[in-house]
Each structure stands twice: as structure tokens, then as C-alpha cells.
Length: 231
Image (cartoon, rainbow, N blue to C red):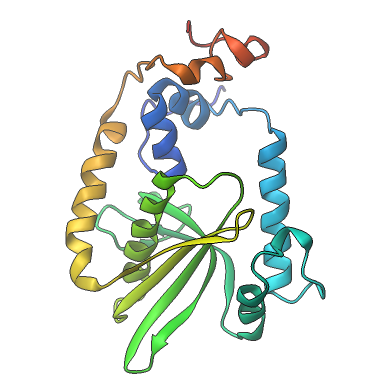
């Protein structure tokens, strides 16, 4: 019996939403129809460096890899901690409550590269670090809101979340702190932003400059792809 494909997206992540906002049809092909894009050099490099970062943080490597050389003190600090967690999968339901990663009610999923207890005993909190490779992109900073919101869901007693993007190639850090009073407005903002994607049933393409590189279309690099879009 053929596998029945759901006619809509019922759960999201930052990357899935980014694909949708770039082009709804791309999101459908990639996330509903499960037609995978071929892995490029940049993608494979990013995966390799993330693995190196996890291995070094968890003391499975003795020497700091050259790819992490812009953050020697920061990675040294992570290695010295006993409460560090890497590649943690977290999911919340539509009420922003924790749920299973594969649960039927999973609504938002995030993968946290690094997290540990932060702040002080008088002001308990969490710290989140996301490793980035490649170019610095201003829009990536919005991910920091999601890290904070999900951490507040999993640790309801904390007073703040300090999240940071470590741009490993450039040696730059983008950071943001959130407190619980900011959560309601941020949750409403993300619910409004993701609503069009979760309500979409047609997934019409949005032609643009990206079509030249889209794997799912008929132009540019897509000539080697499935040609599912006319652009």
C-alpha cells in the first residue's frame, strides 16, 4: 500500500519555516513530499564541524580542531563544565508545553547544539549556544527567541535565558537574553508568523532570484533535479 502523504504541514521548525517563507512549493517538496535536496559541499562541511564541536565539548577529542580555533576560550569553558548537554532535541505542543519529539502533538521542534544551567542560584536560568558555519545572516538572530521560549517551557522556574549564535568561521557572537515577562508577546509573534504555513493547502510557488538555484524547478541548477516547478 502506498504511503499516504499529509496534505499540509502540522509541525514546524525554524528551518522549515524559512524554507516556506522562501517558497511554499519548495517547503512542500522538501518537507511533505520528502524529496531531499542533494547535499552540497557547504552542508557537508557544516555537519562535519558540528560533529567536531560536539566531540570536543564532550571531551572525546583532546586537541581543539582548527575549525574551532576562533573560540578557544569558549570551548575550553564548555569542556570544563559537567552539566553541558549537546544536540538536545526539544519539542513543544501548540500550548507551548513540552512534548515528545515524535509525539502526535509535537508542534515546534528545535535542536539545541549546547545548553547548560546559567545565571546564579538566586536567578536560575539556562544558556543556549548554536554553532553557525558560513556567512553571518542577520535573520538568524530571530532563532534566539525560539530558544528562549522553548527553554521557558522546559524549565518553568527559570528567570532568564541567555542564547547565542557562535559564528565559527568569523569568530563573531550574536547573543540575546530573555526574561519570562517577554514570553507572551514573543509567543504571539511566532504564532502569527507561522500561521500561514500551517494553514496552507495549495503551496503556490513564489518566483524570484532563488529559482535559479532551486533543486525543485526547471532552471539553473534544478536542471539536474526533478523539475517539479515550472520556474
